[in-house]
Image 1 (cartoon, rainbow, N blue to C red):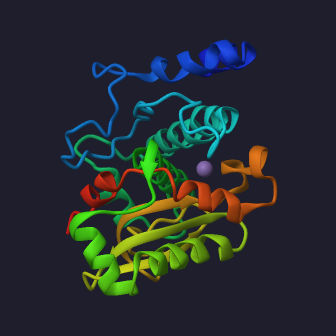
Image 2: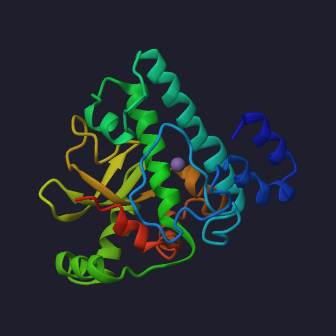
Length: 245
Ligand code: MN3
């Protein structure tokens, strides 16, 4: 979304809330990215449409938080990522975001923070779903039970990783490099695909943003309440489709 468009919509508050996500839509229009097609989608160097309105996850996540988070924070990472690519004289042609994250080093700060920021938020919006479910189904459900003992034990491990991440960061369900499901967390905008940076490597299936900007307007210091609400709004078909192993 263009910055000017966002500011204009933000200025008209309620009237802009439902219209704003459409401004970023492509040919697929308002169709939910979850849809019926769960073919793994590429992570591109641009911001994809949200697929639902800013108010669609209310009250779990309020409309103002969504509008600022998607329209300002995430959009900012995308802009700065592309700027950093230009500065590094790197072409995005034929390059996936996944391969960029896999190859960057800790000292490439702009690519690390903004590349991670863009990937992490893209995954976050894709796996949230209005009227989503707290309970996985099928093969993923069976494997979570096998690994964690029960779905409740998985939910507890994931929530705990998110609640105890000091400062800003993310908690993840990943398929680690040994092929096992694992709960991890990363600081800032680091991502489990960052081979040269993170300790626990893997393919991210589900990630929760625990930066204060993700919840503070509605939950203030009650991060645990936000995590619990997040866990109720998940599209588990998308989570399973993120499993590319
Ligand atoms: Mn965020």
